[in-house]
Image (cartoon, rainbow over all chains, first blue to last red; front, side):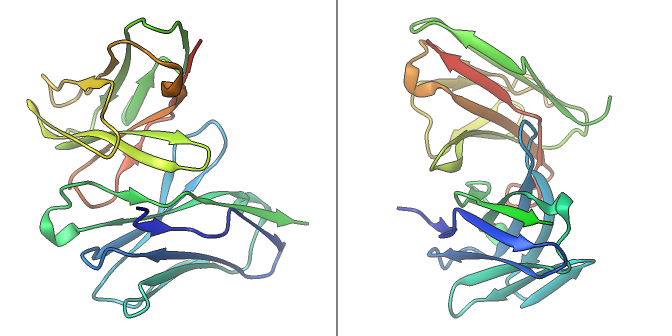
Length: 115
Length: 112
């Protein structure tokens, strides 16, 4: 049973436009959410995170929105740049409970930025 | 070099052989993790460790063994490799169990 779901395997966006990546979760105990970016032949790198006490967190071109009632979060990238082309993983944890099981990841969304 | 490093980067082994993937971190992070990445499955946790000599199973532990005699090292051993263990393996470390984790560059393992 998948606890973190990224239902779009791929997303194509024009350079300069907004990219919106979506993530849903089923475990109501999750209270910390992260986005990772992964280039081919490299390890995932941390991008941005949000705690369940917030509904928005911003870092430069990247903003993460959390809707706890819908168990949904999204990553917005504005404006999208060619270097943003990568696989994006959504991850979640039970941080306040010690995160005993570490991070639970979704299957990833391959973002393609077209010139 | 500071950071987290995995070795080897690429490995081909035969079915039934034992193989060990190495992971070393220089941050003195308490937590270390092993994930595998497979098409259609994303990243799945194999084992994790909260400190030296403390390890626990993750989502997909069968066929794997870990040890952590020193804080900085967390080797992953496949005792008798099977084709289903062909995957890309990532080691990660973190100060906390559920917070931001830093990943190594990965080991691509092929079992033939």
